[in-house]
Length: 182
Image (tube, rainbow, N blue to C red; front, side, top):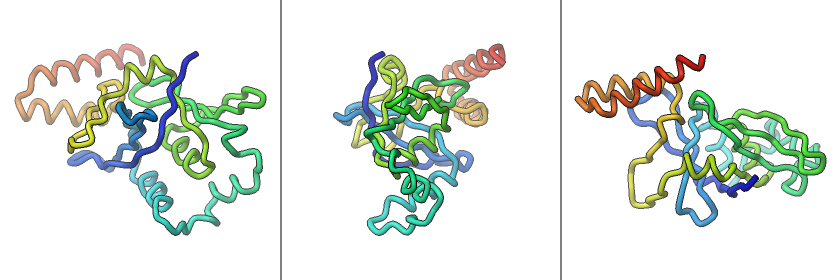
């Protein structure tokens, strides 16, 4: 299995949508990126840890990482290995015994930030899901399969309102595809 190393580059809010944000991860050369949908609570948690002076040393994730001396990049890494119903699937990989522990994607990014773990994505998934970084753009492209059902409904309503029927058709097809899989 080939994998691509990712780095956390920041957050973005979804304008006009539900209270959701995007966690932005890019490859090491910062030429391509993926966006992981997160709730506003995770935006807040990561925001607390982005300042120069952290106030989080007594918060549960930091305490658990501090009392477990094995929680380092020498022993653990994060691996994104699939996407199902608009949700990236992440694993906490124990590199010593190859134990795989499923973890919510946004929590995986938070843990990686706290414990300084490396983040990887299977190469075929990264190639399929990533978009050009485009540092000068003020918009972020998301693959349709990375949208939650709620986001698909919102985007469909907006596409119809904007009379963008090609996009509306594509969104409807994705929703039908998912309903058949359920």
